[in-house]
Every structure is written in C-alpha cells, then in structure tokens.
Image (tube, rainbow, N blue to C red; front, side):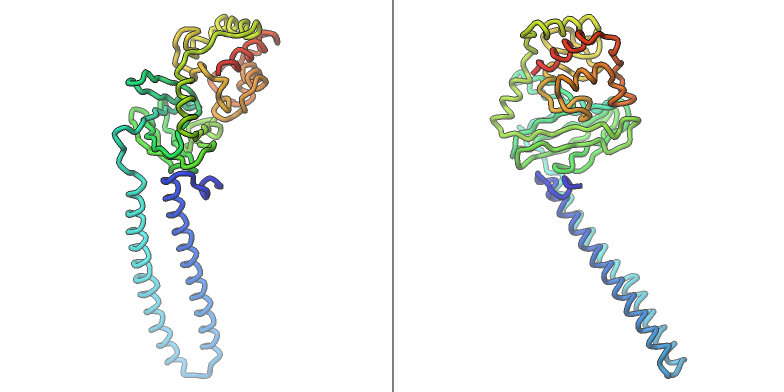
Length: 320
C-alpha cells in the first residue's frame, strides 16, 4: 500500500493522481449523501410535529421527493460520471506513450513460481539472463515484454506502474521508468497456484553508470571457483546434475528448466523474494526448498552431507 501512495516513476504518478481524484470524489459524494439524509430526517421530524394541514404537507413531500429523484438520482450521477469518464480517458492515454526507437526492451517470462529476466542487445553483444530481479537506469524509460510460460500471471510493481496480465503465447508491453534510485518490490497479482503469494520480484533502479557496469558484469561468463571450498562445491554441482535444470555460463552446459545461476550470488534474494541472499540461506534452500516454499519444483538435497552442502552453497555465493 505504501508503494501505491509513494510513486517513483511517471506512470505510477499518473495512477496515484487518478486514485486520489477518485478517493476525494467518493468522499465528497459520501458527505453530500449523509448531509442530505440528515436534512431529510430533520425535515420529517419537523413535519410530523407541526400542526398544519396533513394533505398540503403530503403534497409538498411528494413534490420534494420528485425533485430529489430527478436531481440526485439522475442529473448528479450523470454529471459526476461524465466528468470522471472524460478525466480517466484523458489521463489513461498518458499511461501508454509511444515507445522511442532506441528504447531498450527487457523480456520477462513468468514461471511457476519465479520470473525469468533477459536483456538482449545484439549490436553490443549483450545477452544476459537472470531471475527475479530487473535492473533499470534511473531517468530512462524501459519497455518490458511480458509473457508466461505456463499459466496466467500478472506483473505489478506498485511504485512504478500498474498491473498487466501475462498470458501464455502472448507478449504484452509495459513501459516503466524510475525517477530515483532504489529497490522496488513487485508481486504476481493474479492467483497462479500454491506459491502465488511467494512469487515476488525486485526492481533495482541505478544511476546510468552503475547500471552499465552491472550490465557488463552480468554479460560475462561465470568466474572459476577461487578457493578449495568453492572448487569442491563446483564438483558437487556437477555430480548432483544441477546442470540438468540450471545454467552457469562458462562452467557447464546450458539448461532452461530452472533459473540461470551464472551470477546468482549478486542477487538480493533467493526463491523469488522468499529468502535474503547469503551462504546460510543458500544452504537451507538447497537442503529443504519445500520448507521455505512448499510446492516449489526444486527437489530437496538433504541427502548430502554437511560438508558437501556447505561447499555447494559457497560455490553459488561466489557467482557474482
């Protein structure tokens, strides 16, 4: 809720302004209705206590009721709803501005229950794949190409933009822009199964220079393990056939069933926002993913001994 009322981009700002207009308008209408109700009740008490002609009072009440029905039941709603219609159409047009020719496109594919994110710029040789995080340069609009690999999901980062459905076989576009650096939480807003509530993502807004350095670092292949513990972890990674689902570019085959782990250690969270990134969290997640995210499609590896689990977690944490 705080993110909705604290917009950090032009699209979210427009949505917030529209929301405030509707909130204030609804409050005014409610206040007028309550005032009219109090006036009517007071008038009725006065009429019943007055010693006047009952027939004349009845005729006056009927005439007043007709005016109330026409005025409050037809004219006022027509004026209010017409004004809101014109306002919302005008403001809604600002939510879908035309995309600039050189504006970057980021592909986002929703899975059960995580987000695949891809940056691709063939002219510069950029082809970056990561999971559950979108990085944006501050002050620059970016177009998101949104689709789903399985069921209907919905993309929503309240501080930056409105909701938009993600449908299998279709690509919807959404322009987002962050006006200030920060980390903004997003969420799947369409019930999609058992772990819908834990299908989060984070948008990281960086200065243009920081974003470019991050993009170039993500575009590189993974570095070879630097110490004996991480080297042992790389061996465990291969022996347990983690490469059947996950890719670590430069250190093994390419797979696409699970999230790309080439630079997993540089991410803020594990399991689509479920756990903060750390060696301890990696170890717990590998051993018992169902404990943190019941229904997740990753199997448990609690059969591994403590030394192997620790080595595997250390190897993944160094992938930055």
